[in-house]
Image (tube, helix red, strand yellow):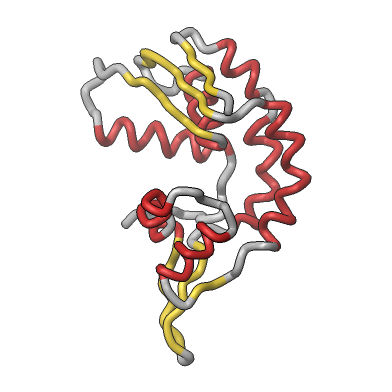
Length: 166
């Protein structure tokens, strides 16, 4: 389990530094070359890390399904997405089923792997429930920051780059 001093600090700089800290902890050898891969917000994070050369040796940058203009334009719909999400579930299985029926995730096996880690188990007087680990509404103040300047960061990165768009 990991802990933070402020679970609601989801600024691009904090998320980028988290990635750098993880890479350095897993691969302490300074000669390690990294190929950074990120999807959506992850793409914004790896582009930020690469453009600022926050890791010593970046061998490649791969960004999947995120373009600055499209990402910024889609932010107006995020509140509706969040309002349509249940705030809690009776079980992990119920959360997995919701993710499939809502088309949030289309692959059942993927949902079984990715959904449980997004949940926190809460024991209360009325029983057990599962809530979202991250309060996405609290992250709203960072949404524009995550994607502003993304194109420039991606293009200015010195490492070889690959952009996948669905």
